[in-house]
Length: 116
Image 1 (cartoon, one colour):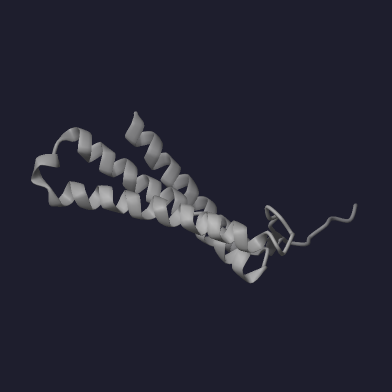
Image 2 (cartoon, one colour; image 1 turned 90 degrees about the horizontal axis):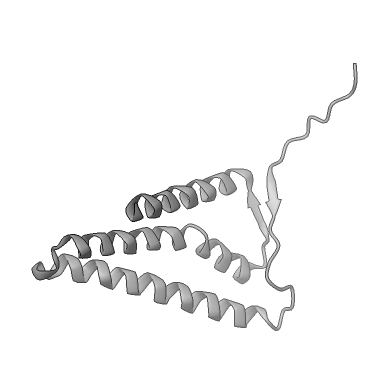
């Protein structure tokens, strides 16, 4: 009977865009500003649809649905990346990875079901 490797994976080490400490604030500002613009723009689309009764047509319903899917899609990965840049901690637990991938796949399925 051969020996088997019974070690389990408890965490993953993430590779960043750059290990250069001078570039980290630039990346943080870039990704944080892009995330905030994406989040706020999609939120304003949803709020505009729900406030104005003239926009209660199927086209704007699907547009607001896509905006919600985009918020969920970007919020599943980008905040973890921003926190990793801030804390210089490049580790994600196995459960955290499964949770993040679940939200990512669920939100991407929502985009596909909205388009078709």
